[in-house]
Image (cartoon, rainbow over all chains, first blue to last red; front, top):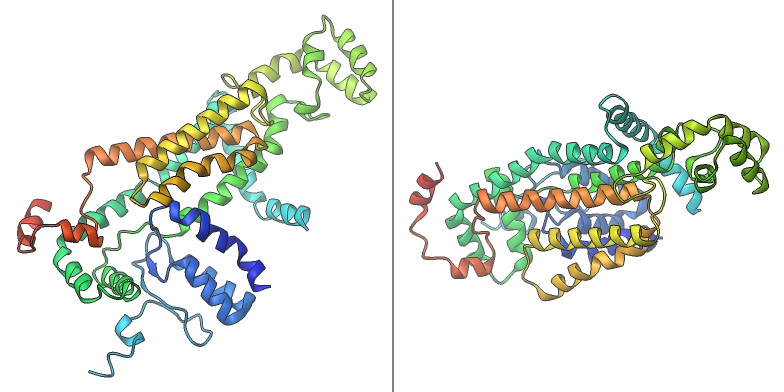
Length: 91
Length: 301
């Protein structure tokens, strides 16, 4: 089910995306984020997260590092990569 | 499954279809443009509305130059971890509010516009164009009507072809109308019917124009030196051909127009705004040693 749902995204990533210059302001990019979110939270919640992410990837945002979180929440946003990799606490 | 999906898409987009239809009708009825020019004007306006976004993006790219030293430092620090490097780069763009990327929404927004135009051309516009509501334009045996000396002869021929008497009466009643309106409303340069699939020489011309403009716009906007991607880019327009053949000719007109716009816009950008040094590892390797940033800042002003 997840695979079927994600088929258009895979097709985009395989065929179209390489042709276009990078557009996404976020890391991971919206398509990678969609795949990860659907695989982690299932079709419904994953798609909600993906739509929310794509809406945030608009011309007025500044982008940033915004990985799929461990737990499902809509309170997401860019974070410091150092926090994500657990480096801040080590200092 | 597929027809249901198609209907759902058409229903969701109905407000947009109505808007596109009334805008096109306005261009045609009030500005007196031919339908083909109306489609081109709609395309141009849509692309012109997007200019500020392109400009914003270019500004971001230029702003990057002032941050070259920091970016180089990041690249040095994470040169062995590409994933981490892109994370840090995006974070850096965010912190300094200089993200030069275009964002995903404008790319995805093109899809509904395209689908809207598809349905507009297939549905409401088709009837508007020939001013004939009993039969849609494509169903009127144009050659029969136009090659008949009088309305009665056209009527007899249509009855002989098996058209229902309601249709025959309506068409014959509007005989003069039909003959006058159809060539004016639907044709555009070499395209006989904007709302129908093109055929024969017209189709070939349209495909040549489409593939040509698509290739040029692909080449002019290309940022990658990767050979496989270039090959894919050259092949892709041809892969699209089987789909495009079944589109209404007006949609192909839209596509060609938007490609021409892309080419013109990119050519203008290349000419008037020099390409800044993008922060690829190769560019960094080729760049001169760093103690220059103050100069660059001044030059930017």
